[in-house]
Length: 392
Image 1 (tube, rainbow, N blue to C red):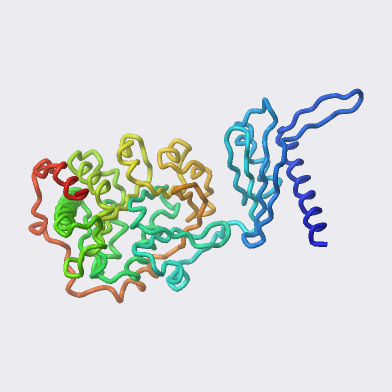
Image 2: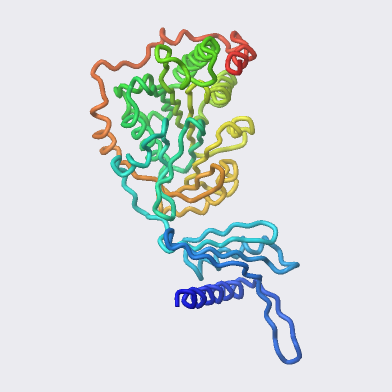
């Protein structure tokens, strides 16, 4: 009886897909005498996933049919199956996944909801929930550098806020140091006074000194690894342990024309993984001038919130983010090994203040200018020496 029900369900699903093909014009017609024959793309497989509450179709286009027509007619598949679909493919073969639940529009940040999900990770970066209602989390230890981009009001700011707040609750001040660049002077004031936070730079010259400080720490750590004969800071003996460092710089566009600063940032991103130094950059509107090929190649994780157009979304590496509606703030496309649509958790400024209060210290002070000991040029420290220290 179960097989019969599955067979009937499969045939109904195939019939629905064929109706979508017909509406989209993805068919061929020819006459056989007085009879008109309609040829549809071949449906190879229909798979029902009861756990994920989804249906996946695999189909192949008819010879001579332009694959671009499938992408152009995606709106037709939306009309037949709803908004909660994924359509992937290239030359001839395509997969259409239809989700019954879809992405939630309202996802409030609650640490207790994610505590069990991030357990055991060293540097958990909580992204949000996928179409199946599952939390998507990755470890910065293995994916060290991220880019977050999106228009004002798209959810970019609250995403950074929730990422930093999660790490503060998860790691002790001895295990994690945060260096924050707040070039809009509007994002990171909440984190001043938090014990994990060693500096909040709000002007370009402050940011350059802060990066110089981290850059020198990177060199110091590379020598430490070499002396201990290990490849990663996690392998250092207990008496030599160092905290993880996370750089988070908002609106990086404001300083990327500074060649010295950019060079430091590129080297930190290139070599930081083994040294326990990780980076999150964010900006509103990307451009090829700001995010050149070298910089983008180092930012392996991309979070693309709503963008103005396709050009911007392609620069980020998250095509589709230009289609995100203003009605769904917090919605973004996450690019890692693949591209998936995610709903970010919403953490209000008031809730963040409440959450961070236990971690604040009355003795907290921003690093002073004298502590930075700025260098005139990073050429004072040879790049080859840094590289050799890390790989020895």
